[in-house]
Amino acid sequence: MIRFENVTKIFSRGTIPAVSNLNIEIPEGTICCMVGPSGCGKTTSMKMVNRLHSITEGKIYIDEVDNSTIDPISLRLDIGYVIQEIGLFPHMTIADNVATVLVEKKWPKQEIGKRVDELLELMGLEPKIYRQRRPSHLSGGQRQRVGVARAMAANPPIMLMDEPFGAVDHIARVRLQNEFLTLQEKISKTIIFVTHDIDEAIKMGDMIAVMREGKLVQYSTPEDLLSTPADEFVANLVGGNRSIKRLHLIRVSEILNRKVATVNMSDTLEAAKKHVIENAFNVVYVVSDTGVLNGFIGKVELKQEGEFVKDVYRSYPEIISDEATLSDALSVMLSNGESYVPVVDDFEHPLGAVSLEDVFKAVRQDD
Ligand SMILES: Nc1ncnc2c1ncn2[C@@H]1O[C@H](COP(=O)(O)OP(=O)(O)OP(=O)(O)O)[C@@H](O)[C@H]1O
Ligand SMILES: [Mg+2]
Image 1 (cartoon, rainbow, N blue to C red):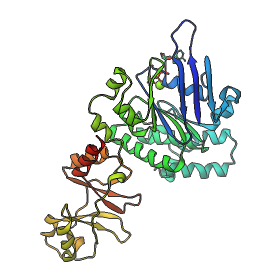
Image 2 (image 1 turned 120 degrees about the horizontal axis):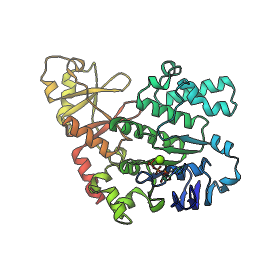
Image 3 (image 1 turned 60 degrees about the horizontal axis):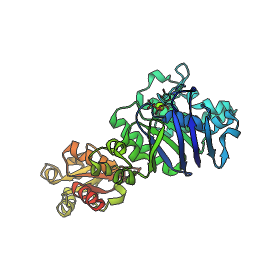
Image 4 (image 1 turned 90 degrees about the horizontal axis):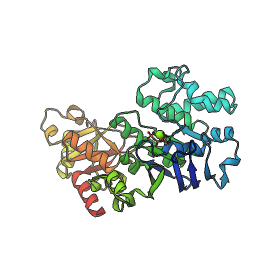
């Protein structure tokens, strides 16, 4: 738990406060998104938590302990920090970057190596390939993953993430967001997550703190922020299209109710035909021996030459996980010109499908 109590930060006397009388409480295991225009005090608020900035007035409590009584060095080692603009050390390898805190904490060398590999794997970066690379040999998205891995290295219960996915394009960002949310379900960290992007805040936050010129304007759930913005500033920030924004709040798993039958590669087309006719989208999923979704057979494929499923099946351009939001699902359907999208689990085993109609229904029910 992190609690700000009447926290004010004034950098130099006579200037207006960078943060003014801030009061928020972030319960254990939840994500608080801090959002607001450039210069509104997001980074400053965060840096007072791990004492990179001193507090001018007020207190910050971490699990009921006043953080000004905690040694700053050990405080920083126990709080994961993803720095704005990533901030990897350019002359160090990826492995050494990730290991920074572990070295400070004097972990045995072997344990460090093991943990670094584990983290790189967790972040989808094959250790054998990336361990010895330099940051400049990574893409923006990969560097952000390393930044997150470094902050998570010593498994800190609290993480401060300052625009952790700010430096990547929209598609990579959506992927990183989804992966991080899936991870958070397992690791349940207490997180302050700073972003410029209100859509990102709505998607990632259990609670959202909207700041303006150092002051907290609204602190509420994403739902309340969209339905009852505190003032015109917040209303403008969340903007129009609020029902579209609500698509970010609903996960595919919450509305998934369409099953699709499956056939194997070695099944005959005759066997597939029955399922295609019966299914609402006129498709049957094609799975591998291990149950992985490889593609589909629809009416067009049925008409093609061939005796077996493997002769005519086609693969999907895109599939989504049940952790994805309805907004992700809609975007895939629109970009592929399809009225449905296949949904799979972590192992890419099919769970069903979500259709345009399902998305419409979910938004209407939410109204
Ligand atoms: N070290 C510093 N010394 C003096 N003033 C500072 C310092 N750091 C930040 N400020 C001022 O405090 C205010 C808040 O800055 P802060 O970095 O917290 O903004 P931010 O919300 O993180 O903005 P951004 O979205 O651009 O990162 C700004 O007016 C900034 O100029
Ligand atoms: Mg900042």
